[in-house]
View 1: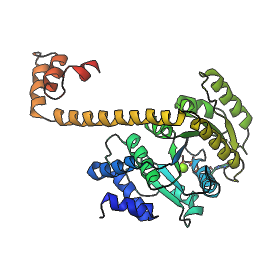
View 2: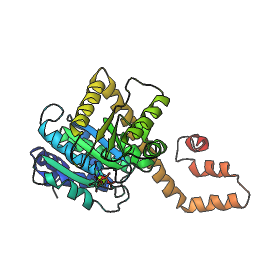
View 3: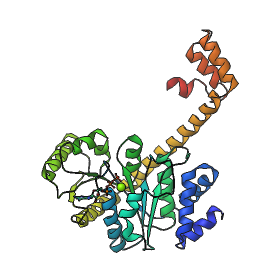
View 4: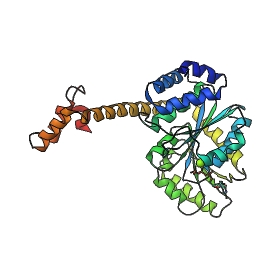
Length: 327
Ligand SMILES: Nc1nc2c(ncn2[C@@H]2O[C@H](COP(=O)(O)OP(=O)(O)OP(=O)(O)O)[C@@H](O)[C@H]2O)c(=O)[nH]1
Ligand SMILES: [Mg+2]
């Protein structure tokens, strides 16, 4: 297997197999993953990332398919390559396709300027919250200008992954409760843009009112998420969606907003990496004889749980009392 630097060089020259290998390494975690992440970090590229999230079946993949076309034909700064990461946290498999997604995006399989990849994690320290940003950086480093990230908006982790993009699009459907569900799942806070997809169905207007109402109730910032209606199955409204994404990007590019948002996300990633490392150490510690001994003393009543923790962590953390005692 060629080393990561060689893979990067090939991927920059348009070798999709090399790019796929780089992403497999990122996904797998471990030393090679770190090398890949390090190389990508040091040659950032200029990709703009767009996250699509929402309830299962909302039409994210169908929309993504149209956004691929928009990215290819118009791009954000003119036509260019497009990459898609279809994140599947529930899947223990990697590299493997989410079959439905692949089928829906099939219109682009013969286009060399489109790179589509499903992603799960296999033991990546910090999980998808770290692996996906790493993957986006790899795609950026090889010169891809537009990266789409699709993830189902259920569960904290998925929502986090979707939010870790430059523009986050939340997709809902017409009908009672979808907007309210989105609110509950924490999707409202992360939305830079709402899409009411399946606008061919009844009650789109009601869903718009629900969303507007919820937006009215949230703290007004300097950007109020616009609401775009689409019918992904026919492509209706997709142009407006692409324009709305462009407007949000323009907004972000004004002043320091985009850079500041990226710095905030990077700090969160850093935090997650540190937390994962510490967690790993805890795993090692609690498997030790030392731990068993201390546990016994605690269960016998000779040590209270705090003393036991101090004893265990002495020599591991600079101040054994610090982080754990405060936790
Ligand atoms: N009527 C109607 N059906 C649509 C529309 N957009 C998508 N669909 C259909 O809805 C179903 C789900 O679409 P997907 O694009 O797979 O949805 P998804 O959000 O990616 O689904 P998951 O990835 O499984 O969460 C498919 O059968 C689509 O053909 C639309 O605008 N109107
Ligand atoms: Mg999908």
